[in-house]
Image (cartoon, rainbow, N blue to C red):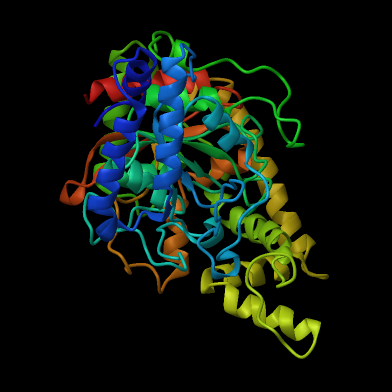
Length: 474
């Protein structure tokens, strides 16, 4: 599998043609897509045209940018002007956005070549990519198993070699959990450090766009391209951020690492995954870091708080899909009937479940008991993480409690499915960065991911730690 850094370097030096690179990756897509179903749309023609333009720029002596000629896959909830964006939902089927997401503009400006829009759980609601209206994606390591979710299409595509880079969105772990299950690197940046303009909203105070890659350095390269202030996003952080690629090889000498007890000792985490976290801690210790255990007490309440806050925000965000402004419309005798029939036909079971849960949590008489209480728990989690980071530079935990599970194993039990994100959700509530790094294998030889967490804007130290872990298992 060729790294993005190597491909971009070869294209910029004139040693490789972007058109050849694109054809090689489209051939991989053609060979594997019938089994994996990682993509909702393959944009082969536009990719070939973009590659020819890159080669033309090189021939004229121009530099297309740090991602010159590198194929990339985009989660199908990122808008690109004139390209269908479905969120894997019937209600948006056939809808073409009139604008392009800031992150897509930035990867295009850096010379990357989008080759596909990838499958996801409908509106990013799920932990397995089984909730897509267009059918599930399969794990490239074992076709009988899920790739994780909701960004399972991007994770599977990068793991299968469709492209060296991918973009996903992470609301409760939707980049890190599928990255762990597919054996690739996945990053959730600090909330506000990457623009959400052009990301179809699920839960606006939690959503964040981030990279998939096969190496830590490639993930750093992509993050440096997409991060930075965007006036079009009111939650975008205006301050300049530190680039991560220049420091990724700086090691962990002198850093302090805390193993989060509540996320490592929780019930249901497979023993091989706990062992992987302990081995990762030893590797960091050998590399010069000090390691100890740390308690983040309120992290155990993260799952409960998340499944009140996220559905509440989703119930508001998804109210716009009413049959008038976007995609699907099912006619009725009056407006209310049309709205109801459209939403009934357009939304899948999991989306309806979360809209109802969120509407109930926000309803008069229950707002303070449910939504208000969840927000108070969120504040406790933020404070507990802040106390932990007074003593530790980074934190360590499992990414997922299990390796990839069988397709259909949890579809009848929503609570069991929700527990798949138990280790990743607390970081979203705090707004901090987190990333998953492949670290060994578990049952059936399936990949295990170790999660590295850092305080807000702590990406440089997080990537340094991740790079040491990557090197220790190379």
